[in-house]
Length: 226
Image (cartoon, rainbow, N blue to C red):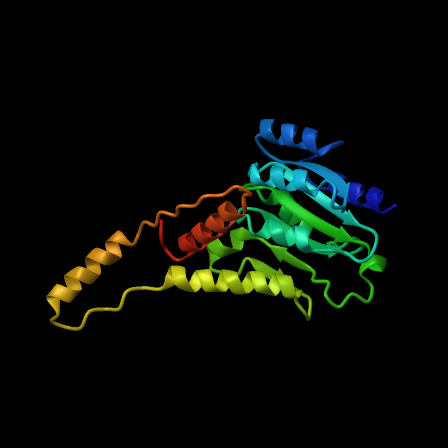
C-alpha cells in the first residue's frame, strides 16, 4: 500500500518519468535533457550501495524515492547523500510530504533523493527528523538545510556542525593593513588575490575522501573562492 501511494505521488509530479528499475532510471536520466527519471524503492540495506553509486554520477535528471514502512527507520543513508554536495535530499512522512517532492522534481543541477516514511513506522521515534536539504538555497545566502522538527537527529546535527565549520574557514579573510602600511597592504592584496583560487587534492579508495573534498569545495565557493 505504501509503495502504491508513493508511486502515485511521483506520477503526479510534472515532467517526471517513472522507471521500473534503478538501472533503467539511470539510463533514462543519462539520455534525458529535462525532467526527472524516478525510481521508487523500499528502504533497505541490500540495494543502497547501487543508489549511492548512481547519486555519485551526478545526473541532474535522476530521482530516487525511498519508502520506509517498518520501524526503526534509519536516516543514515540520506545523511550520507547530503555529504555528496550537489544532491537534493529530503525526509518526510509519506502521508505529509509537503513541498519536498516538488522541490526534488525541480532540482536540475544534480540528482534527488527523498525518503518518505509511513507515520506508523516513525511513531514515537524522537530521533526522526523531517528536513529538506536544497543546495540552491546557498546561492540566495540561505542555509541549505531546513527542518520543521523540534529536534534534529544527532548524526544530522554533526553533519551541520561540520558544514558550519567549513563555511567559517572558507569565508575567513585576511586582516586589513593599517593606514600607511603600504608594504603590508601590498602583501595583503597579493595574498588576497592569490587566495581567490583554491586547489583541493585528494586520494580515495572508498570514495569518502572524494565526498569530503566536494563538501570543502562547495563551502569554498560559498565563501567567495573559485
